[in-house]
Image (cartoon, rainbow, N blue to C red; front, side, top):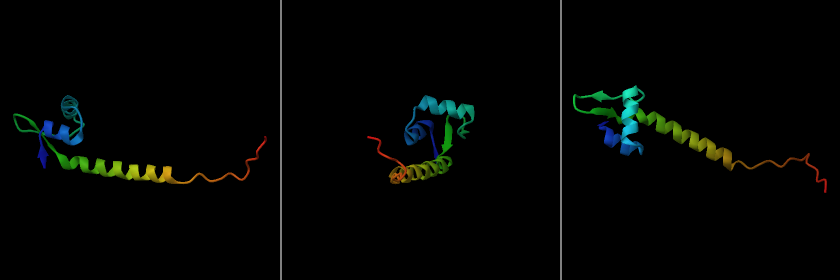
Length: 76
């Protein structure tokens, strides 16, 4: 599905000017129809999937209990 820059900015929760700059730099693929840039929203799907995967990995790591170290001696 193709979206305009304002629609894509809302979808990505970012500033329209920043998104426009990324399009002009070629960091986000877009088609110019003579009046406006159209951006295919499916190009962000892989990114969102990777973010969710890393978020789950970090949450698993943070939920892992800290093992007790048997070699620690209380010096008090």
